[in-house]
Length: 284
Image (cartoon, rainbow, N blue to C red; front, side, top):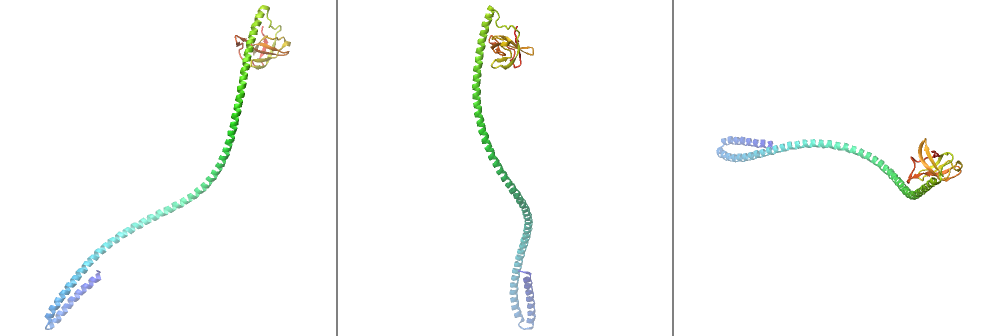
């Protein structure tokens, strides 16, 4: 109940009292005022009781309204606090939204840069794929060249093996010839012991080595039959006054001769390998 209703109820109560007083004064002037007064009093008491009850009810309603108003005020305060909190949260959310928008703008720029970089990367990938294809072609060509080189290497190795076999066979032949020559020298020495020295050169001979092959043990000297050189003659080879080897003539030409290193006990009688340009001279 509102305050206006309460005031109206009080005014009604006051008016009722005033009416009752006026009625009492009026009844005094009349003969039956007491009866009427008593009746009126009884009615007024009933009215007063009704009004008191209504007033109590109005008071109770007012108290209930006050309680509701207090509850409403508390609810309003709570709502205002919630509104304030909501406003603050809204401000924070707005700030976050602004930050997110700024971040989104930055991300959009980043996406543009990444898109540009992606395009460049794709072009680079295309270039690299082309280079890879060219490299694979070169690799295949190199592999083919390698296979061809390996085939050629095997062929050369076979040729070298064949030549090595031929060389070993030639060396064996040379060793056999040297052994034969040594046997011939032994025979010559026996002949010289019985009939005198046959391989001695009557006149001194001096020359040089024109060609040398130490592996094959074949050497060509610059003196021959016109210089008095004969088969089985022995000559000394030297270099800068140092002894190099003793050689035996196995073939004689007019102006040159072929010699080989003398062997004693199956071993070559030399200090070092003979070289082109070494000097040769008669042994006395």
